[in-house]
Amino acid sequence: GVWDDLLPDTTIVYEWYNSGRDAATSMQMAIECVTNAFGGTKADVVLGPASSGPSMNVNLILANYEMPQISYSATSPALSNHAEYPTFFRTPPSDAFQGIASADVIKNVFGWDNVIVISGTDSYSSYGTAAFELSAFNVELSVTQSKQVNEMPSYSSLTAAVHAISSSNTRIVFMMAQSFTSGLILREAYAQGVLGAGSGYVWFLTDAVTNVLGTVIESMTAADPCPDCGDATEAPAAMTEAECAVALKGTLGMAQVSDFGKMSDAYTDWVTRFWAQTDTAGSDPSTGGECAGGETTITGSAGSMLTNAPMSDTCVCSLETDSAGRLLWQLDHDDDDLTPDRCAGMAYSTGYMNGYIPYAYDGIVAFAQAVAIVGDGFSRPALLDALRMNVSFEGVTGQVEFTNRDDNKGDREVGVAYTLVNHDGTDCYTLTSVGTWTVDTGLALADDSYTYVWPTADGAKPSDTVAIATCPAGSYGSGGASCQTCPDGSYNEFSGTTYTIEDCIACLRGEFSIGG
Image 1 (cartoon, rainbow, N blue to C red):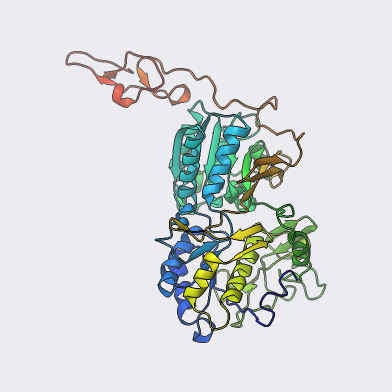
Image 2 (tube, helix red, strand yellow):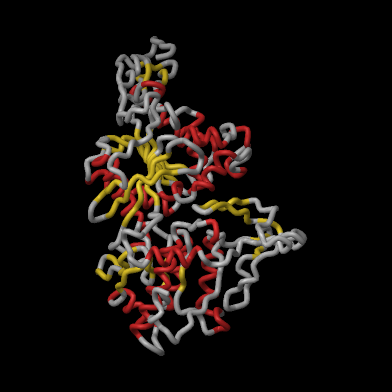
């Protein structure tokens, strides 16, 4: 292996806990790690959780015990606050870099000067969007409007937020929201005609969409996508996969790097060994093949496999366990003892790999390096110091080391890279990798002759703004579809695109006005 000489006489054991992307559950699991884990000997490090919000909750507990926490996918810029999260480290870059990359590409690669922002309210979305807007300001990219929607938004609020886009003359939209919420926003945008082939609107997406496109598509195609958002009849009509392909045609976005071969000499050999592992996604004991009742399809470069199948005579789960003996891939999905467990797992043979897996591997290597540095009988404070000051290596994701400045400790600011992707509309799920953006060199195209796919009728690159009709006298609004007639009993004698309802003047006594 790559690290055979690192801790050659030491076995790293692990226990698995599920945060459930829930604040209370995350904190409960963190308490287990510092009290009862490993038979009461406690953990030495926590790897995860995956999401930024639960990671914040976990570090509130771990920091009190000086326990290192290394995340492989929590990317909110808020986690860079060392005073709030003093024992937090991460191997992927902060979304501040995703904001920098997105603003740089929109402004300096495509030459657009104006952009609308729509985002979620969770920590990933709100802090990442703030970083984008600051970066936009720094490169003189004007944010003409900025709208937020809740993670479980009411359908009426979705309609209003997307209507702000349709009534604007800006045609470039930057969206940063969790996968599920992004699907709801895109579904509404398609219904209002501001997304998709021929619309003229370019949507610039982030990795919550580009790396988890399946979840986004589920939100776009489900008959009742969000019961907590309102009655299903209030949602835009469920989309077919063919419509999703049309809707996503011409979108751009930043994605996690899928091939680190140009950034790490170790990557190619590592990924070959990764895919050679035995599948754990459940199997039919009579054939050795996949479980026929699987509800989720995992697709990679070498094929597809069904997973998430209920246990039965024709479907058995992997018996792989963590060091506490807990089954890793046989799970009770609904907390109902009367229904069969389901088989989750890894479909290595398909050639599929989640984009954050290499970061998780480098997280374990960083921990092992720190242990090797401090030696036997190490203390947690010594481990923290080693991670900050001494750990530096070429991982499978490139050069890995953590910041150790007064204003920032535990972030990764070297080896930062993203893939620029473009959706060609061929099907729902396929994104074309256009090139790689790095913090040092900006965007480098994989093919200098690449022709971008645009959401315009003639296939031409759209302008960032279009001319829009002014609101006539007697009305207010920003022009076009946003124009509203002044209420009865008030008037506005001027036309324009900057008037609000406050500019509708009440009639004097003895005067009247109907419709402005």
